[in-house]
Length: 326
Image (cartoon, rainbow, N blue to C red):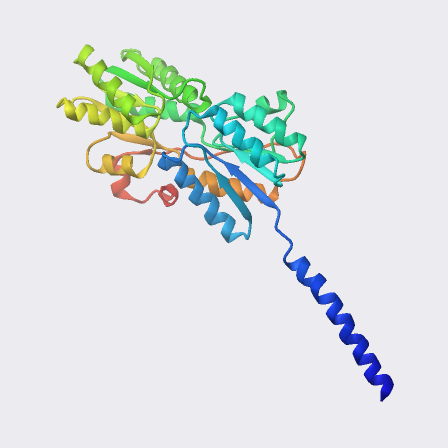
């Protein structure tokens, strides 16, 4: 009996010794996955955040999202990247303000042993590999296709006319903005050579600047027919200028992104259309790809759909891609 109690005492001590270690293991912090995006002011990025956070929660991932104040804040975003990379997350995925910031950020992160990935198709795998920073994956829209889709839609809508068109570009140096404009111009020249682009100028992704530029352009070209804006905020700014001059019926405005305000405007016969990017889906797929990412794996490139949202399509509501429109 004495030996029995001795054994029980020994067992109890062993359990008490092991339990704190087991509890410490259970409470060990999860590996962090970091996602760096752009402007807090643009609803496009909020939809992407929702996609990241919803999918991370569903998968039990420790995900952190970091943003800068402006789509043009290059230095701020690079500093943010360096701070985030310094915490050595397992993976850092970023939508960079420009390619220079993206490459420099990925270089610093790789030096710290962090897996890197591109979001929103800002840096191609070829660009990254040439800089010595191979990506685990890149996921996002094809911005060249976005511009092409807008041009094809405009060509169909304006068939039989010789329209005058204003192009509102994004911020200088933005890979996405450059591709959206190039795709639009090249496709328009191919399909609709009668169309005339009377001005193509940067409004820096800004609603107020777009409104000012659109108003000035209309005064110089009173027969303006269409405005193609490389994002919805600029498109909505241009539409405000048209409304204030009584030209909303004359000048048709096409935007890019598919944000809620733009969709509402399309339904209310404001904007003619918006080419949606489905940022929620981009955020969702970024998390799913991040979970599987391994160091030095071959780059995985994934292109998400970019439907042209018109009043007819939104009213019909049957397209399965609308499930990802936020």
